[in-house]
Amino acid sequence: KKLQECTLLMVLILSSVTPLTHLQYLSAGQMTDLIYTEKELVQSLREYIKAEESKLAAVKSWANKLDALTRLSTSDPEGYLAHPVNAYKLMKRLNTEWTELESLVLQNPSDGFISNMSTHRQYFPDEEDETGAAKALMRLQDTYQLDSEAFSKGKLSGLHSSALLTVDDCFDMGKTAYNDADYYHAVLWMQQALKQLDAGEEAVVTKADILDYLSYSVYQMGDLPRAIELTRRLVAIDASHQRAGGNLRYFERLLFKQLNEMNQTYEPASEEPIQLGTYSRPKDHLPEREAYEALCRGEGLQMTEARRSRLFCRYHNGYMNPRLLLKPMKEEDEWDSPHIVRYLDILSHGEIQKIKELAKPRLARATVRDPKTGVLTTANYRVSKSAWLEGEDDPVIERVNQRIEDITGLTVTTAELLQVANYGVGGQYEPHYDFSRRPFDSNLKVDGNRLATFLNYMSDVEAGGATVFPDFGAAIWPRKGTAVFWYNLFKSGEGDYRTRHAACPVLVGSKWVSNKWIHERGQEFRRPCGLTEVD
Image (tube, rainbow, N blue to C red; front, side, top):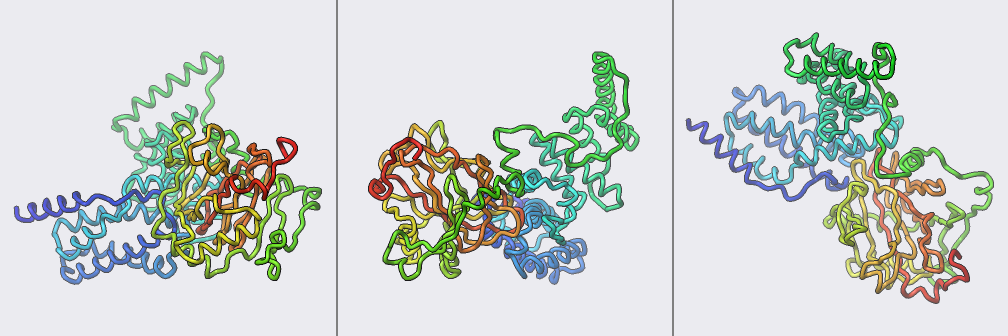
């Protein structure tokens, strides 16, 4: 009875701790903290084992596994988290597996371990975070056309890693998609779970459970013959399954009704295994989805030899700016029309480190302006963490602002603060315009629209993370220390709709950028109006 009372007390203590914030859209920098949190929990677990070794044989097996894992992750946290499978499994461990371990420990409480768990639990990811990490993997899977087996085996963009997904991991991925009525991804991941289970891999989940989800998901994708074949396999394994028999009869009636209506004969399901491309991905809200994702993969680029011949590199002195006369900037043309240029050696390594240091404590989920209400809100099409820095924060920020003004010849007095963004697991910003379309919100009436964008790349990215322009088929790849610049508006003040662009999901690595949105007011004599609407 006393043990039950202690257990109940500890459960109440743990359940009373409210998470500080959802971690679904963590930056890579913030996820590094979770690595060390997990390491500390393993150490606490080690101490608990020493105190009650004879009673904790089961817990010790957990500790051995997690200890090896955290040694690997803490040796190079950023490198470890650069792989999206590691990031997903970190979320899953802290949300699911550590909770299971906690329940095991509570059967015979130890004050030291439970106290440590209680202290750190407020920082743990929750169910929503694990779901978000799973969806990030699916987003990468779609954008870069990776099959589930590639993810499962840690083969991303030619990289081979020890970050593997087990049968149970694949099942949980499929279940996440299933619960979101995303049957397309549910099929891919349940099929992978089944494939690995059939290959002899050990798992907690049963083949019957996998076939149950897989057969119904295949039915939802409109493939009745295969749904029937999978359901028959389920019935053969578990004849007493509560849904299998009813589903099988329903699927068969539905199929034969369709065959009669179409005057066709029954053909058995294809023996080809389900893989990427077996079923078509459902359309979504984004009309240029295919073009956007193709550019992210480096496909569909419209860089012709004729266009390339019009691109040059030069030294740029900011229109005879005194600060650039002795040390002009190296400028390269990235695109001819609209004109996009890249500046080399725009930020030093020390400046980048300082900007990241200032931004990390302030990183928060990036927002967009709701076109209907004008209110800033989060959105699934923008997945990153951002912070805003002003010149008063540090001389480095003031220096960067001045450099942008010198290079562009535009005043930054009416510009927005320097925005720093870090893209973590599957981080992206789908196609969008930087300028606002009418009606303008109140701040644009004062400072005008976003005339131009100055985008600093503060890290190299191992795979993915390009800035793409679907309208004219351009892709610009991140290079640490460089910056790209383009005008969002014509000289008339009308928006240049060709500048609709996107930040592709980061496949491997961590992407840091900072940008300056330069507004219209104050540029009247620096960039005068043209003679036509599209000058």
